[in-house]
Length: 242
Length: 242
Image (tube, rainbow over all chains, first blue to last red; front, side, top):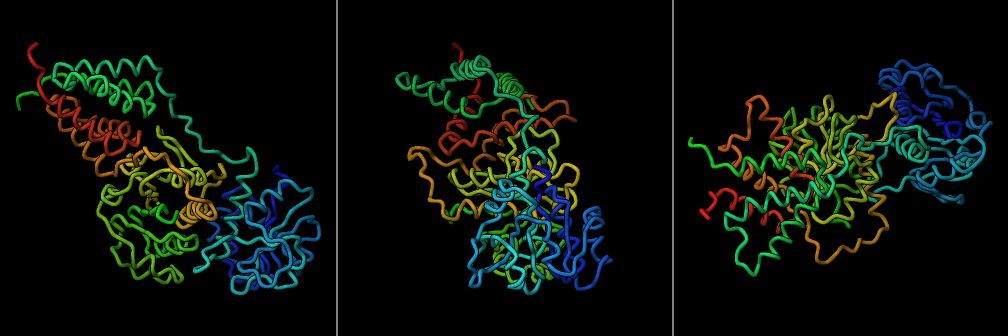
């Protein structure tokens, strides 16, 4: 899957700072291959490094091309990002759908991002098989370059298997076995009984059930049940004279 | 579904610029409700507006609180974002899973984001039912505040768009708001304190936190919390002579 990771192509980017931010966005989600088409202020650009916040490797490995066509010459699948579709006749996909396509298609993939102010030109879009559009608030579409890049990189990383750390609650313990829970419930009842909680007699069964439902719900683990047993032991004592 | 949109809570944010960027990220994906907990440089902050790039309505409507607990007092479902897990015992979910949970659970939801430099404190995380972690490049985790916000907002918008309102079990009550949970926790502490539970003194904070984590987990509803308050009232009485 790693060999399928898309290339991020910044077409005529204006500010070095934004190139650095795009590199940072990429590397957060495991994308490392950046290509630059005719960056306005040349390359390398001293503003890019500080904005990359440590993603220097992406900048150092970035390749520069004069035209978009040259930048994607070796790519089989090109996606052109646009904020708004304007008389577009190509299929339009979301970042999620693009990630699916990138994963399922053979050959290298490239995602084109246009200049900050104007976006991609018609000739750039013409190189693409699909238009990639982020579904956005129709009343407030204001994604900057790095944000558009990060959403595409994020969707790709969700698709790419095993390359990224999935947050699992590996420190989380399994729920305590039922017998520990029974012990907790019995402890509650043992304290509540002499204090007159289970009254009137005809409500005892229902009250017991309510309490059991409440205590069964959380799926507390062994340590949590043990802590609660300690709490109950304390509650069983009379308060100290203070 | 619109009524279920999560509230974005920035806890002790440092730079006004980042508050503005977070507002912009939110509005791009239709989130409008921002809460600020003790912003470092006060509020309003003149640096926020320009960075919001037009999302002024979000900033103008932002509410300010002194503590995180106050900011989420009316929320039934609280998610705490962390970049790295540190001995966390709560369930860990991705932005996508969090969006699913927010859509399916009753009651208001809030997502907590910590200060730029340090992230959320343990006490903030303790208020949450789940930890929200963006799966990220293990060798380069460098998400800034606005990027973390935009990924959560984006996943929410994917869920909210074109998804019909999930039917929920009619008889299932929503989780109790945070302030009822605080009342329950305070009741526990009030009973435990005079019985010498919080000993030794140097363990008090940790013990409090453990108890809070256990009681925060279940998402008990109003009736369940009321039942438990009744249980505690009984436990506060001395046993009868039988």
